[in-house]
Image 1 (cartoon, rainbow, N blue to C red):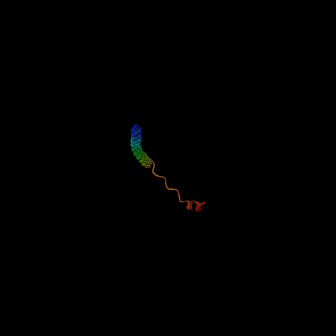
Image 2 (tube, one colour; image 1 turned 135 degrees about the horizontal axis):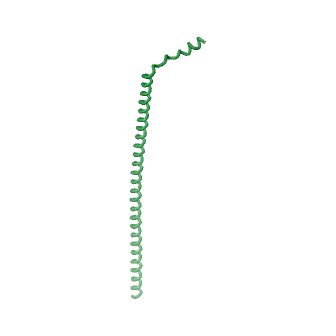
Image 3 (cartoon, rainbow, N blue to C red; image 1 turned 90 degrees about the vertical axis):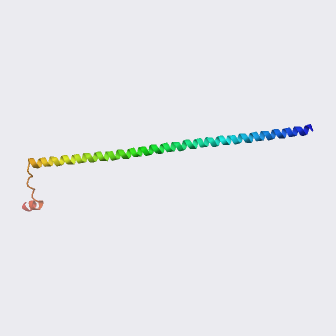
Length: 110
């Protein structure tokens, strides 16, 4: 009877140890799943922030390109206006000289 009681106690102890091991494994799987979830969340947050930064940078770059084009256009317009004014001033100061004879006439006379 003592032997039977000892066997039952050993079996109960083994069962308890097996359950404890299974519980430990289950907790470890839960911790690992939680860790993976945290990593996944951080990664998705990082990707979203990176995407926002890229979009902002590309919008800024596009805005800068538009500004540069507008500045170049304004400079070109100012140059064209200035040249027109200079030509107008020259016309007022000096009447245009007679146009040179066409090249065919010049070569025929020579």
